[in-house]
Image (tube, rainbow, N blue to C red):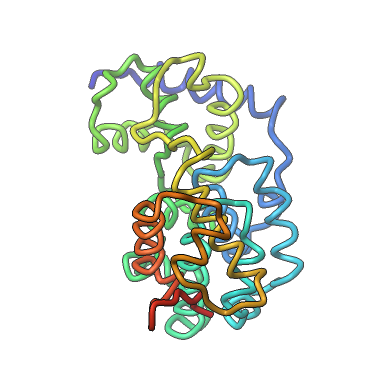
Length: 272
């Protein structure tokens, strides 16, 4: 991959110039608290920024410290998460907070050195927390950054993750990792969008309306707000007005595998 230093300097100038004039005012950019950054990064996975802002602010008011959150009831966590989608993220985040509190003395950054032991935390999230909390001189490549690099440097769509990471490192301004990644996020969201570049992400979120994800959310909402602690398959079919018992059974089985429900004596119960 032959890319000149001059091209990289011009790229840095373009991105930083745009960021200086158009940076978004996002609440998690006003803190370097690793817990708050962890929270925002998990919330932002496959969820629009405008939706996350409201949930993030409510969350940190309800659970202002990692210890507060780790001690929270699981059902309260799920209720607070309803509407953000992919509810297993809430379960994983809650368990991760407990592990950090119990095994790493509440030190989020220390725990990120062992992120493979933490539910729902991958390489991107672990590195992002280090970047936005401590300004570590490292890079992380998400869908936005991948799209920007491919478009700006005219790379093939099947460019490898390793090659992109190496290029991202060359583009990183030393000691400015936090600003640089924030700038790239804004540049990708506001300028080099997927619609303009026609560069699609590697994985695409499926349609929500009428999907199994929507039905899972309805089931979870029923258990969280119902006076009944459990329900049978037949009662859920009736409550959800769903005729396809096999589909519902499959969804419920998935929720059991995701540790949201248990099944005993022909009844499904929310894990609390």
